[in-house]
Image (cartoon, rainbow over all chains, first blue to last red; front, top):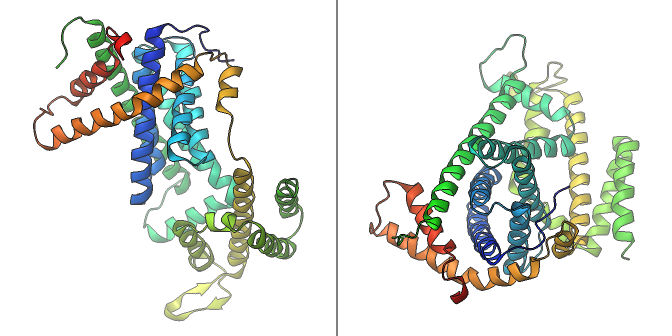
Amino acid sequence: MIKVKSNLNKQEVYQTAVLGSIWAFVEITAGTLLHLSKVPFRGLMLSVIASILLVTAKNIINYKGSLVSLGLICASLKTMISGVFILNPIIAIIIESIIAELVFIFFKNGFFGSVLAGISVLFYTFLHSILAQIFFFGFEIFKVYESLISNILPIKTQNISLIYLILFAYAFIHLILGGLSGFIGFRLGTKTLALINSKNEIY
Amino acid sequence: MKYINYILPVTTLIISFIFDIEVVTIFLAMYVIYLYFTDVRIIKRIKSKFLILFFIVLLFFYPLTGSKGEIALPLGFTYDLSLLYSSIKMCLRALLLMLFFNQLILNVESLNLKKIGNMIGFNNYDEILKISEELLPTVKNKISILIEEIKNGMINLKSPTNLIANFLANLLKTNDINNK
């Protein structure tokens, strides 16, 4: 069970608040922009942003349960500012923060843990999209895809179904993007922390 | 009325798993009529272009790929009725489940995030939320300034990581925390 550190100090409170408001701002603006633009893979793009932010945040605010706290603050701000309660994105924010927190509990916030957290968040996005299709249309949806794709694309595969190859490629793209966002988050987090800790004037 | 909003979608969902396509179609029609008169928002929520396109693909293009091809069409195409039958089943199932979830989602008016926070021992929830709310205009303003400076070429974009790290560090600096 995830538990948040009981009494946060002033610095932890302030930094959680800042990172929470940054995440909420990005969620609201990027979310609205992507929603209006109707571009495909909107969920994937928002997940990449969320995973970079979560990994960056863990490298700055390293107390127990910091990412779940961040997720709750972001979700609350998003609800308050948009003025409407929309369950799906709120649930997604909280699940992403829980997944990242769990990875950091087991692997600590080093390079490996950061990359793995990024991969896990994006793998959740992949699973969510696949499971939603199976749930709404049934397993038969894969037969539909396979039949349509094999009629459109002149590709013949031996031993393995074309749809599994496409699914594998789709998962692979998510994992690569997850690893990359974890890496970016790690670099960003460590660099930011070093800058905060240094007494030098920034800019 | 409150309980009907939960009982009805659950009953319709169970029916969709037990009965055959004909019965499900009748129930779906009744369910849509009920929703139209009680809460039309639920129907409007599934009015997505992508979903309509997906249904068109399922109902018109998928049966064209079948090997049986009971109905002959121009240009040598054939239409497979068994695939059409399975397409209709898939569409009905999806429609029913989407209506079901939309009704449930709309019934959940809010999720008590503070309660979730309390459950996991997040004692500083109120305090952090208050500070975040106050900080949001500043964050928004600083991000807008940064974007404007990048657009005007005032900032070197050679290392985006350094740029964002500097930006974050500036916001997160806590040496003057008491003044903020």
